[in-house]
Image (cartoon, rainbow, N blue to C red; front, side, top):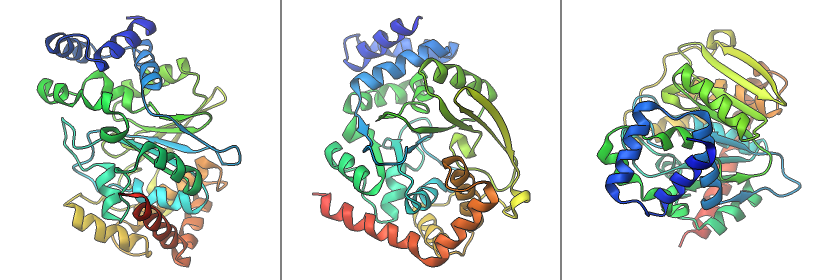
Length: 327
């Protein structure tokens, strides 16, 4: 399909105009063939047209928009909520996107992870999300509440029992309008190449693609992580070896949300099994955000932020704000 045809097809599907058999057939056929870059770009066009929108203030630093699989995590303990807190503490805005428990993984969700830390972000209205983003730098676009049209496709995902083409598109779509740094996870090299071509069509000129844990943006502490960046049409490739930063360790398995909460709170105090992973991830993303000149400097800044207690203070401020604005 052309970009325009793909955009039209997804718009019709979101509006429920085809019958369920047609929608299911389209999704499974497209899943078997795999979407092409212009088709993914058309799908993003439709999400930008029909989906929620978040804007930055003129005085704000360009946000980081993290793109990860909407069907969550099951194997490894997520680091990105903690990385986000360190970025927020350094005045770096962060935009996240997610949904409820989705097939095929039905993994732990972004909403659940932040809720475990005391932040109830999923129940905020889109107006409150915008307000909180301007005031505190954090926005979570939670599909069930903020993009109900897209959430109607959950039953199709369940029935075809495969990730549909929209799952690939979700990795690179952002509700943020304007300039930003888009950081997206991937698993397989063909996905990386396809997304680079798609993002070029979408005129995204500040991109980081990460071969992270379970397709997320989380950088492994047990293996070398491949990262590709594009900034102003200049493509660069990096390999992050945790041994080079004294952060090598086994990637921590995800057991349950209670264990993860305890591990995360310890990491924010500078101890525990997730601490090294948090330092490495914060160091890398401090570097890409321009907060630090290199990964080592970013790691040192992360250590100081944690040791000073300022990250915990940032978390407490966010908790106070969300409690006031959840009804």
